Image 1 (cartoon, rainbow, N blue to C red):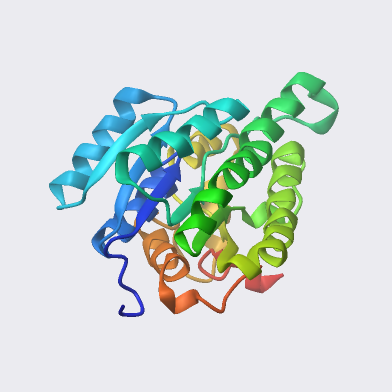
Image 2 (cartoon, rainbow, N blue to C red):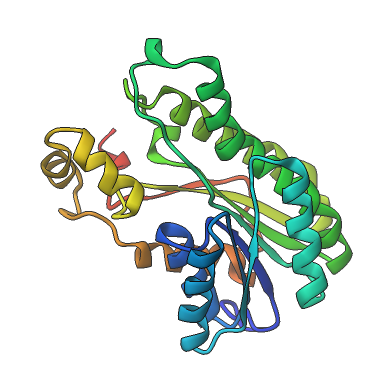
Length: 254
């Protein structure tokens, strides 16, 4: 198999019906992978599937509530039932709730943790036996630059994304023996629905991002496609337990 060839591989992308998830799904589809678009909004997911199919991909959608452990397990089982195997899992589904830390109630805190962190672990646990059976696999957990930095309006979000990095390292060391590589990707300021909402809430955010990012621009969802292909392919077989920023140099400034 060529280093970046994903022909015959099956990938699940949670939150794959838009933004970063869809950008990564497109990259893997272009490299030959079959794609399961997993999301809560069935209509939006089907639109993403149609877009992938228009590009020649073999793709399907499965509705999932990632905050529910059983729904995560059902997602893995349904994907294997449809395609016959599972090789790649991208845990991308996420949410934010922007408030000062003293303004959150515990239900809001737990919701962010359930969607961003606990769901990723549940999906990893369910995927593990299928990947082991296949002789190996690739797991990509989506963190954030807030895995590195703090922010006054992002305390639960940053905590969940910091947890993603540590979870990634632990799973990588546990499952290396099974030829399963587990890595994290830390997106910077990518132009998505989530960050478009943030621009409406946070004064001056757009200008600050442009000024602070060495690349001088916001990222595009398609900027995530290359890292998805690399970490899903044989090219990364000796790469595990890493957390790779894709942020136009934002984190390099410290």
